[in-house]
Amino acid sequence: MQKHSTLGEFIIENQEHFKYSSGELSRLINSIRLAAKVVNHEVNKAGLVDILGNAGDINIQGEDQQKLDIYANNIFMQTLKNRQIVCGIASEEEDDFVTISGSDKANNSKYVVLIDPLDGSSNIDVNVSVGTIFSVYRRITESGTPVQLEDFLQKGNKQVAAGYIVYGTSTMLVYTTGHGVNGFTLNPAIGTFYLSHPKMTFPEDGTIYSINEGYYIHFPQGVKDYLKYCQLEEEDRPYKARYIGSLVSDFHRNMIKGGIYIYPTSSKAPTGKLRLLYECNPMAFLAEQAGGKASDGYMRIMDIKPTELHQRVPFFCGSKNMVAVAEKFMQNYPQDSEY
Ligand code: AHG
Ligand code: MN
Ligand code: MN
Image (cartoon, rainbow, N blue to C red):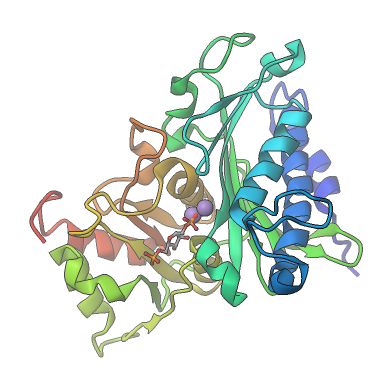
């Protein structure tokens, strides 16, 4: 029987991929693994909220109960801070980035992390899969000094690692360090992630489209045209519509089965909804590493120069050929055309 390595073993075995590696990135991924297990435990208890107490209540120890997205944010921030393996963190849940200081060791670390601690949080109340998304960059300012905004506003093509955790029917951690994408499934009985999905790839073509079609009337004409194309009775169409409303879960399904995820601009949200730094760049890195494609409809997501931490962009991501077709429909119209 083939041996299934644990995530811990896999991290050590693959450390040699990194020239001049000091093991810092390995320790960083290890911390994310640990935080993921803690958050997973809490997410799994979400259905017991009426019994154990609501967010906003005072729990038995007299502490305030936190909403799950705030809880997840705190766990990831604390785990990374306590171990002092990054010099800065930016989170979707925080207005500004956080500088990790207080010890020489922390200030000398090379990496910054960006996270969406709980993605798809509106699904928590209904027992539907949610996720965590993370992204890692090497700082560009001088080591040993406090991190600066420019360390976070790097193009996605500078990412060193990215990944997500999907808290689903089983919990998986899927990540890349630029050498393909590997997926690990948590065995909850013993709290160990095992390599269950080595070398994950997007099928080049797919038959699933994932978009919140309820907003159809507000979409740009290129998106409307593409959706009509998806629904035509021709070749392998009409495609199946599948939309969970949690990017991580929609992406995960589409990577396994073949599909496209779209969150376009709309007359209501002229720059889209998803965040470039916390959601789109990490998913784009994973998509490309898995042979897929990610675009804003006009250009590669990872080539966009970020201008602010919480910047939003339209997002087309998934099977390579499907994204290429969607881009063609978009490019029939100028990027800033009327809806
Ligand atoms: P978050 O919970 O981190 O705010 O992200 C939710 C995002 C994404 O995961 C999901 O695909 C999308 O918002 C759903 O938005 P709509 O409800 O507008 O479709
Ligand atoms: Mn999100
Ligand atoms: Mn979130």
